[in-house]
Length: 127
Ligand code: SF4
Ligand code: SF4
Image (cartoon, rainbow, N blue to C red; front, side, top):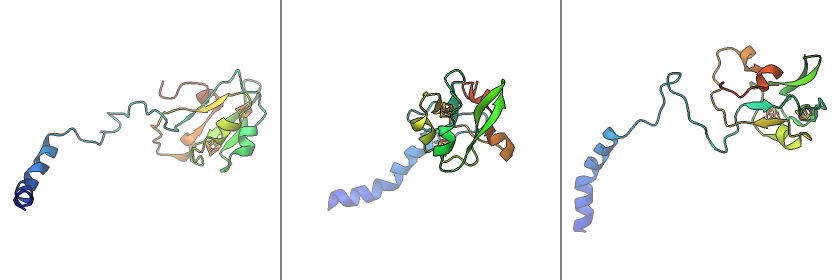
């Protein structure tokens, strides 16, 4: 009883500790998220391993993968505007060529730049 009353008296002061905590939000684009383990972010494609079979495109539920010509042959191109990051393309790729990285900085102001070319997919995102 007495303890409960004391707790009620001091409860508002407990909130003051939040004034000294670091904010949970980031000042994007000046601050970026650290690597997030287990997060499904932008894809990466191993151009040497990719056989051009397009099983990834067939299993994609959102039709986010299309074949495009690059360096004399067909490679996947990924439209991140359509992708739901289900990871099925990675799971079904017989060559282990396409993978979802933990790269989460996928901000864009136009939908064209959400389409990732094979050349871009071949590089580590953010580098
Ligand atoms: S990424 Fe995998 S599934 Fe897609 S075309 Fe290349 S080898 Fe085939
Ligand atoms: S993660 Fe899913 S939705 Fe995105 S490209 Fe791969 S299969 Fe398609």
